Length: 102
Image (cartoon, rainbow, N blue to C red; front, top):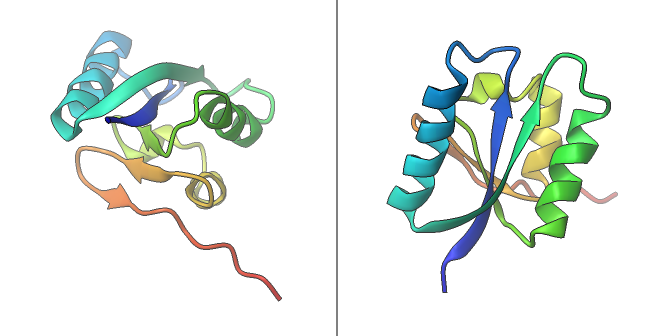
């Protein structure tokens, strides 16, 4: 059974939306993921972390695929999303982080 994934496309950092969408699709297929949905955000997206994680939850995914880490608006958003899902780009994979409990 394939692993479910969502794509992440940040239009604020994308030079070519079509090229970046193709990277998401091709990388998902190359890794054997079933791409369930692509979340599109930009600088005006309200609560992008919540949107990404909620979409991942709704589609029962364990991976977020992006054209590059720059598509995550900040390192804190990368870390927050990585608590729920692996982050995959053509250059690197960030495995899910384990939540630290006191």
